[in-house]
Image (tube, rainbow, N blue to C red; front, side):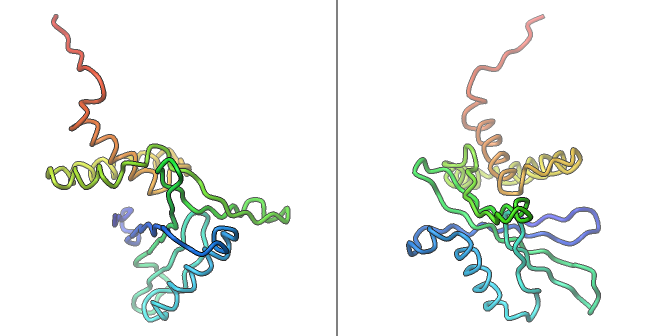
Length: 181
């Protein structure tokens, strides 16, 4: 989704799903992330965006207009795969342990994400995509207000899709209680 926080830069979040790769990439996640970063930089060739920077959970390229330092647009690419249970996994670069000499790359599971694509497709076909967008923005703003940095965009997206899907197709997974008094 593309979002904008107030008058700040536009932010595009994209998820790159790695379905198949040589064994050396699975064994060296730093190599995987650097290979994707270099490919992104070559594709863009610095004509518009800056070189992609390695943040914790994605690669971030920035766009500046009018030769000013103001960022106009941020493009975030998260590297994902699926585990044996079908849940999405996000490639995370844990920089907090760098000072200890431990620069760690790991896969971080996104809970309840195994059906998110099918559910999103069904919601779109049913004309309910605006409901997902609205719920996504509500949740994103709630987490920003709480200064909760444990809910990156893809996790918020999965939560929004699952909540709207549950509301319209599962009826919340249970019964609706109503007062008779």
